[in-house]
Length: 427
Image 1: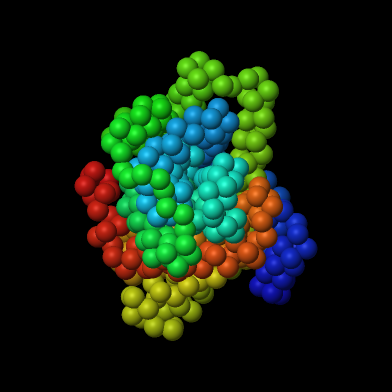
Image 2: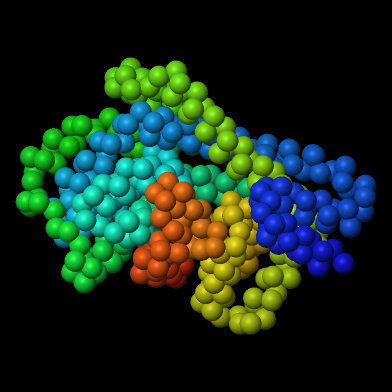
């Protein structure tokens, strides 16, 4: 009975608009009650155990560091540097948006933070420069998923923590796929630039302009280098590096730039607490639902179903990718990751996939879901920030989604490319 009641309750409450963390928790409690009322007493302990992982402390620190950098205006220097590098091309502001997303990703690791920041700054600038608002929003949404792919990625922290996989290895493995997303999206912009009659930047490439912009954005650009260098070099854990990143951001924003007020710090603290609270509620609630699924051997059932379709490694990997993309259409990606990672990881291990490779494939597939309707978080962030309709943004997004799915398939089937950087660093 519970095998029907739990999914009905989950999707029913989700359709009614309840927060995803509460929806997952209620569905999990229904499942535990069906097993036996005495199991309900285990719920608080299960929820606490799901959060009682030291690496999870890195998430609020990275979120806080990104909020400080964004609120203090330090990231404007990164945007100017990106514009100096590629802004002279046809569709230059769109290209700059992509390059800036790569730079910004090394600070926040959050797609929604990227979308909100650029929705407030780059989208209005692109519209003023002759781009349509839906297209400017689509470019921003396509670039925003670079954030949770290139380190520091909150999804990598969650996956590494719950699956016991090296977070440093996941960080390293996300570098090439993140850069590939930037390259293919810039390719889409270049291919459509003339057809859409995108504006051409003034002048040509200027070494002097790049040097000038680099000086302005040097302190902001130094932060992701410091974070990644300390983690990948083995000098600090992700949590330690995240804590130092907060101190660095506070020093640069408050002491050097003097652009932070006490009111700003209050707003930064509130926003960080809100984002962290939502993520941790989802994690805690998903722990209950995950326990129920394990008790009922749901992971084994899904694995057997997929293997019954075909035992060919490449076919099964394709089915897993399709499953992740479809579920990502209707579910929050943090919840999907926490629920499905323990289900899919053993199956992918049977297929001979290394844990880091499997993790990056799952993370990238879910990241793409951030910009696909009906529940793509980045779409709704941009719609609320810019006032543009979700449907109009989605229409302009499809070429970028297709390009990023091609990158996803490359990550899924070309293991050596995905693991090149981790192996190079000995991770």
